[in-house]
Image (cartoon, rainbow, N blue to C red; front, side):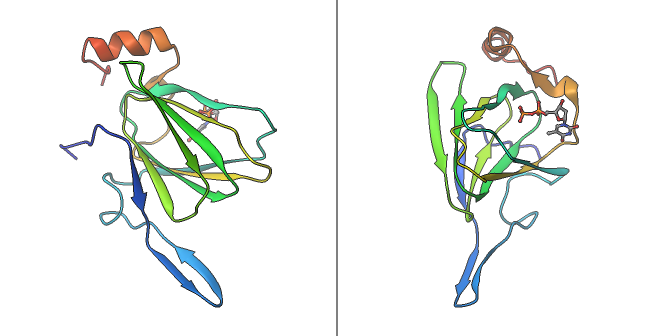
Length: 143
Ligand code: TYD
């Protein structure tokens, strides 16, 4: 996709609620601004633990709290820190590439679903915040 959104955003996913329960879904081409290459999920996170602590050069993600709750903390190169408390299965947080990203404050039995735009590639990670800042300021992401 040529026009990659640069701002994080909550995406309101479809939800079908009836007396039998609730159902939501994500369909490529309809609900997210990228093609899906990969899905992973984070679970059994011990109390107080954090995940993430990196940025992706290319990878974009949609993060959904399928169960329980957690915070997604995104920081940009200006040092602006934004926190989303994820606790609904019908909201997805779109995370553009090149945002510093942390997941924390996991509730017991929480389950984070992540839909990703690229296959796993360790070279796509920027794990050093100073390096992230340098890349952003120079307008490059190595991709
Ligand atoms: P990592 O992305 O570092 O976890 P987090 O950002 O939540 O702290 O992934 C942890 C490990 O899992 C990493 O060493 C590689 C592996 N991994 C894969 O093999 N494939 C994947 O799609 C992901 C997300 C991780």
